[in-house]
Amino acid sequence: MLARLIILLLLAFFTEFYIFFRYLRKKCQWRTQVLYFVFTLLCVVMIGLMLKQYYTSESVAAVYQSSMLICAILTMFACKFAFSIVDVWSLLIKKKIIKVFAAGFAAFCLFVSAYGVFFGRFNMTPKYITVENETLPKSFEGYKVLQISDWHFVSLYGDEKKVSEWVDMMNAENPDIICFTGDIITVLSDEMLPFMDALKRLNAKDGKYAIFGNHDFGHYHNWAFRETNLKHIAKMDSLIKETGFEVLHNEHRTICKSGDSIAVVGMDEWDLSKIGKKISVDTRILLAHDPDFWNLDIDDSSDYFLTLSGHTHAMQIGLEFGDWETSFAALRFPYWHGLYKRNGKQLIANRGIGCTVIPIRFGMSPEYIVVTLKK
Image 1: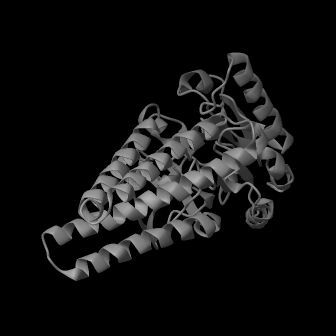
Image 2: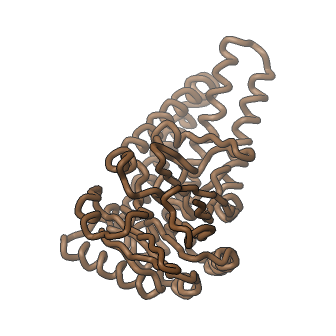
């Protein structure tokens, strides 16, 4: 997170210096030039203060308001940057049309941001994937697993009605089980409170299972004491269980159907060896929040024919046309979205529902995934 913020700040300062030397240095009075830089510095300081509030405040409303202000300021910098990377060509190509394109590109970035904040992050998209495996017990042919991930409820502050509508959509899929793969909150456990009734209404024939993500453990809050963090984890565990989910901390549950069985395994730590010794069922579904885990312990001798993950959000911005999609997430995550296959095993990376820090989605809309198991 810190590295990304440093990169964003460097790009912002590059943009501001370009605009200053290109348009302000010779054409504006010194008072205007000073005010311009003071305003820029105030924006940077404001981002810093809002980030501090985002990760330290005990108020869900304050955390949400901080994210909206950060989004507004970053949108301004993004539009300036978009203008600059096109306008710089006017130094080589002395055509007025370049400036027109630059202004148009900046306007497009403003549109993307506005759409992403007010519409894109609410455009729930169901995704349907069929997973085939020869070891699947016959009784589980056509078994439906509903995967949801990364609610990050603070980004949906005040949108209880919308979340309730999404729950109705998910229930209409008539799943056999529901698997939640982590990050139900971003910073505070109280983020869950307005959405408890909606979560309780989620229904599946054979139960609801959940794991913690990195945010659920409180990794991004400035805890004064270790004991306070442990109380947060205990409260998270209690709230999730109150909604009807079974929370799997390096545990498993066996699902039986007509004499056949599969195991749903939930992982907190990146070590399957301890969990695997306790499982008698050979056909297993693994819930692992971070898909990068697939690089470590999932090999050709593994019993985990399917791994369900989230975490990446597909970076919340990208392009999608039918089955084709692209995002900057591909530069950072080897498994960033969709279905991956290796050595007869399969991984599904869910791009999640909510947002972190910046409440925006463009192209990479929120989703739930219905996985149908086939032999």
